[in-house]
Amino acid sequence: MRTDEFLRALDHLPAPLHDRAVALRSYARPTRCADCQRIGDAVRLALTAVHWDELDSARHLLDGAEQQAAVHGASCRPRPDDQHGRGRVGRWAGTSAPLVAATDASWKGRAGGIAYVVSDGHYGLRGRGTGPMDPTGRSRVLINELRAVDFLLGGYDEVPAGMAVLLDSLAALRYLRRWQTGETGVMPSGYSLRPRRWSPQPTLVRLAELVSRRPDLSFAHVKGHTGHALNEAADALSHMARRRLGETFDVRPRAHALVDAFLRDWHAAR
Image (cartoon, rainbow, N blue to C red):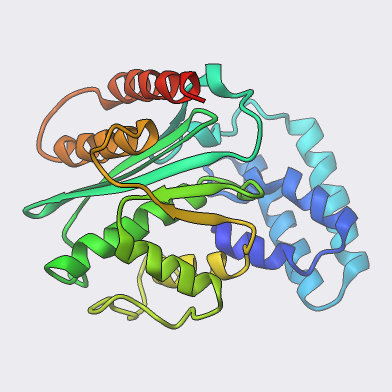
């Protein structure tokens, strides 16, 4: 179950069930472990039961999922920070809220990269090639700037309240602010709304809906290449992700060290 689907389902849960479902969120991810799969199935069925106002059934299913999780333990569950190009520099884990994040995208030829870094040490980077539904020109760059924001927000079961997201793309910022006011049907020129094989929704449609439900998030512009530590870190990570598509090197230790260095500068300046 994708993060956006899970969050939409959570909207229908009363507070006690909401907190219990959030605690079991990691079991709803794809897994090869049969026990984790059974727990995840129970969580998904509980959310479906709530959709049909069957709260007693949902409560019973969550009871069973919690009991199975307690017996099974957490040893085989993948850590979210290690999945899909994400990581964390642990020394900054105690950073107090509200968190500040920066996202960026890099594109050259037919190769691109998206990335983010957060003041609490979380970061992510992902390379991507040109897809059959990708537009060309400025729209391609804009769409990937927005994909970087989706990559950031998708890294959380629940996006931290009050998070500030910094972008160096004014065009991307305008779309995020329009979506936040409810204009979720507005999309960049050339962005295809055709169904995807790998997702029930196109990335930007999913992002627009998520942003529209989170008025507490703030999106702000930061001028690129001016020495802003978080922006420089996100920029460097996106370039690293793009280069990794055509070069062979161990990206994780480089990314980890880079993020740590820029966060040290960021926190020292505050």
